[in-house]
Image (tube, helix red, strand yellow):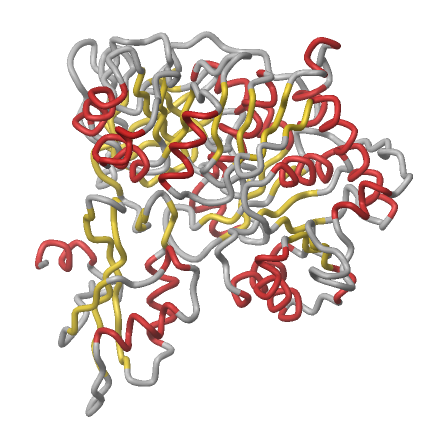
Length: 531
């Protein structure tokens, strides 16, 4: 059976992201603070933000970038990120967001795969960006350093240069339902990172669907979850801009700095991943700050149990709502959430389907659909979702698209769920092989391929091991080549030199053989059971 959202449908207009977020802004809202730099305290009003967005759109259009082009944005959370991201969308450019922690080789792969012709970065990340651009065959003039000047990153254009150019924002025309707004990279249910094709309508739809979360006009939203990740991009950045809430940006997570921002800016709505929730619940430093302004904490990106939710409430106060959501990059990303107004739903669940969303639960062994019960809880099965926020496919990868999207539009999530009679979903397991380290996706296949490139390793497998702080950590099982000697520290160092920090292997076990099926597939469940 098809399970429909119990929330009323919302209207999803056929407009660009820019038009949806800013097209109906009122004169009163123009002078509200839109973005605050959490480090310096500098404030940007909606009026100034929109002028900067138009200036960036005009500058990139004057450089020849428009509807048929992809530009890479490689930066941490800064007010400038908000300006540039929306300036690019305003110009009709497709934005591929790059993880700020990615090393040069990973950046080069994404640039080549996405077809990006321009990289926009910051000086702190310039060495990796330069290496990635060079690896992708881009010239120095195809790189912009937002905070660059004659002393910092000489020779590169800067944001100040873009803002100073006298070019009006271009008039662009495209079909929001088919034109790609963003190309974030995701491993999907398994495998190597792939470009997720999300249209303007996908992003507009998910902002509209996220109204159930309960962000309001007077909320103050600290943004430590990265904007380059779809969670930060949609749920923090775009939802806050649409509701005219106040964003406070932080370029990285430092607990003392984060708590200082919560206190000094009177933060009200926190969006976190479980490791931050764990710190809020247990770290002694929390007691040194006044967090009485917080009214809600929403966790996503990785599993979050009811005990941790209760610990957060016990620490922050009984009036604080602790919510949970669920989604994937491929769904822009939110498909489920506990609405702020629903105090009857367990914080250990992922809540209800968002508006305009449908789901099926399928037995992964038989393919039979599992019914939603009239009372009680259903049996477990794989979750499939369909809605206006679901991607149009993976860039240049029709096979992966066909493996993920059914002909009727339902998308495989790879997660095993149950649903109760009231439409509340619970994630109980997952089919997909991704490791979730502090909310970041770590594909085992990528690490395994890297390990196999080591001359002293003849075979390898990687699984996620439970970890209280990180959720999961990547653990490698290594078979050494005949006659070779290798240590755990050597394996860890080999991987660390070539991947972003969150992808590092953090434990190694040497084994005689990797368990595999008759078809040669790694039996990860056997490794988990044995260890």
